[in-house]
Image 1: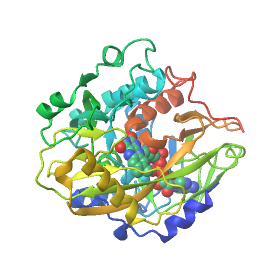
Image 2: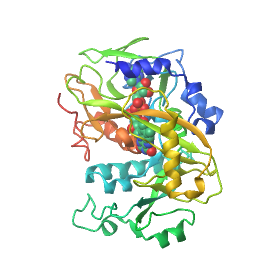
Image 3: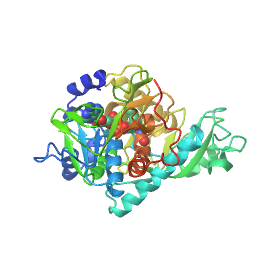
Image 4: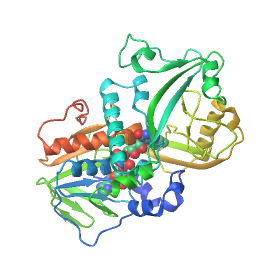
Length: 397
Ligand SMILES: Cc1cc2nc3c(=O)[nH]c(=O)nc-3n(C[C@H](O)[C@H](O)[C@H](O)COP(=O)(O)OP(=O)(O)OC[C@H]3O[C@@H](n4cnc5c(N)ncnc54)[C@H](O)[C@@H]3O)c2cc1C
């Protein structure tokens, strides 16, 4: 059931040592929400049991509760929620960016997720802490895509509401940003950013019974679930474990894809856009810090290689020269769940009447979590595959 390499890493990881730029920015209440521990009385027969307290599991819990599916319990093996990539990623909710790279279903799903986040944040008085972002994609000569995956044949600007900017237009918008000679830029507004730990804390505090430090060991054919803290007999069980657990993992091509991040301390520049593209980039935070990343690394350890984070900061200087010599305040890494096909997988678990899996969100688990939650809740509450996720099927081993 477990992915041993990941388990080994986690037993060596210490939350207090894993300092991301996001950890520093939490309130005591948010920290407490991320570490609920084990409640005295466990609900052993919830209507929905969710395995995995990453952003995807937490969003599923929210959606199930909102759909009126009854009592919900989340079980996380680590001492904290959002312990893996869910608490350490870039915090981008930027579905329109995927017009450049991904399928129509993928983009539509990402856009519906963004809408759900907006709705939840408004209902919860801004508890998610979303902020609006615009993305400036900077391309060296010849590198800019000119057709959209959404509407091949249509120019990218027309098809996708990107605005093409030449270097002088970029200078007007972002005086400190440099476009390589002969290069160009694409601008898209209306995206979101979030502190991923704040997001998970806000979800967790509304997710029903949330338990940390309890590991799911296996699930029997009758749908009962064995854990390190005894047996649960849920109505439905949803694995939100990043990768597909055993025995369903047999034959599925999947792995953790490590990425480094870096945060650059505030400096003497003005930056109002997220900078992206093959040259380098970063996300500006309100205090002037810039978050850069991530890399795609070969190894799957959780060891930080400082030179990889520093490389991201160096790439930022290529598009934001004023960041030369700026201090790198945080260096960290985390692991993306990758399942061949690069889409999220949202599907029933074969052989179980009451089992689902939702994972493989790779580079976009934060962006996709809300829509994933809604789809899983719909499916549990109804009987048919919800619209829009027909292609997100579990690969057959
Ligand atoms: C460098 C980097 C930058 C990124 N930037 C972005 C970004 O800007 N925007 C975006 O949308 N996405 C981003 N991502 C991707 C995003 O972080 C992931 O897709 C997302 O966190 C996956 O969430 P998850 O809940 O599926 O998995 P995880 O966060 O891995 O959570 C799964 C949880 O399940 C628990 N678990 C596993 N097995 C068991 C068990 N047997 N019993 C109990 N608990 C169990 C694990 O301990 C873990 O906490 C980035 C990723 C990386 C690496």
